[in-house]
Image (cartoon, rainbow, N blue to C red; front, side, top):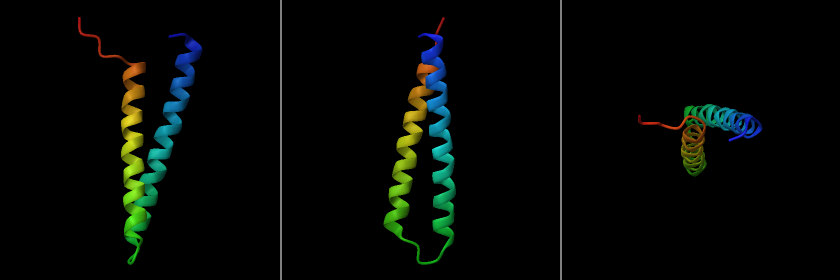
Length: 68
Protein backbone atom coordinates (compact mmCIF):
# COMPACT_ATOMS: atom_id res chain seq x y z
CA UNK A 1 0.00 0.00 0.00
CA UNK A 2 1.39 3.38 -0.96
CA UNK A 3 1.55 6.27 1.46
CA UNK A 4 -1.16 8.12 -0.50
CA UNK A 5 -3.48 5.12 -0.28
CA UNK A 6 -2.78 4.80 3.43
CA UNK A 7 -3.46 8.50 3.97
CA UNK A 8 -6.74 8.24 2.03
CA UNK A 9 -7.80 5.21 4.06
CA UNK A 10 -7.02 7.01 7.32
CA UNK A 11 -9.06 10.03 6.23
CA UNK A 12 -11.96 7.81 5.21
CA UNK A 13 -11.69 5.94 8.50
CA UNK A 14 -11.85 9.20 10.46
CA UNK A 15 -14.93 10.33 8.51
CA UNK A 16 -16.63 7.02 9.28
CA UNK A 17 -15.75 7.32 12.96
CA UNK A 18 -17.20 10.83 13.03
CA UNK A 19 -20.41 9.65 11.37
CA UNK A 20 -20.57 6.80 13.92
CA UNK A 21 -20.29 9.32 16.78
CA UNK A 22 -22.91 11.55 15.17
CA UNK A 23 -25.31 8.63 14.86
CA UNK A 24 -24.69 7.74 18.48
CA UNK A 25 -25.65 11.28 19.50
CA UNK A 26 -28.73 11.24 17.25
CA UNK A 27 -29.89 7.90 18.66
CA UNK A 28 -29.38 9.18 22.20
CA UNK A 29 -31.36 12.34 21.44
CA UNK A 30 -34.21 10.42 19.81
CA UNK A 31 -34.49 7.87 22.60
CA UNK A 32 -34.54 10.56 25.27
CA UNK A 33 -37.69 12.07 23.75
CA UNK A 34 -40.93 10.38 24.67
CA UNK A 35 -42.93 9.24 21.66
CA UNK A 36 -39.92 9.10 19.40
CA UNK A 37 -40.10 7.24 16.10
CA UNK A 38 -39.06 3.67 16.91
CA UNK A 39 -38.55 2.81 13.24
CA UNK A 40 -36.22 5.77 12.77
CA UNK A 41 -34.20 4.73 15.82
CA UNK A 42 -33.92 1.18 14.46
CA UNK A 43 -32.71 2.50 11.10
CA UNK A 44 -30.10 4.66 12.78
CA UNK A 45 -28.90 1.73 14.89
CA UNK A 46 -28.65 -0.46 11.79
CA UNK A 47 -26.62 2.22 9.99
CA UNK A 48 -24.40 2.56 13.06
CA UNK A 49 -23.70 -1.19 13.05
CA UNK A 50 -22.88 -1.07 9.34
CA UNK A 51 -20.44 1.74 10.02
CA UNK A 52 -18.87 -0.21 12.86
CA UNK A 53 -18.30 -3.17 10.53
CA UNK A 54 -16.81 -0.92 7.85
CA UNK A 55 -14.55 0.76 10.42
CA UNK A 56 -13.34 -2.63 11.63
CA UNK A 57 -12.63 -3.71 8.06
CA UNK A 58 -10.62 -0.55 7.33
CA UNK A 59 -8.68 -0.87 10.58
CA UNK A 60 -7.78 -4.42 9.60
CA UNK A 61 -6.51 -3.16 6.25
CA UNK A 62 -4.44 -0.43 7.87
CA UNK A 63 -3.17 -2.43 10.84
CA UNK A 64 -3.08 -6.10 9.83
CA UNK A 65 -2.77 -8.76 12.49
CA UNK A 66 0.64 -10.26 11.71
CA UNK A 67 1.29 -13.48 13.54
CA UNK A 68 5.00 -14.16 13.70
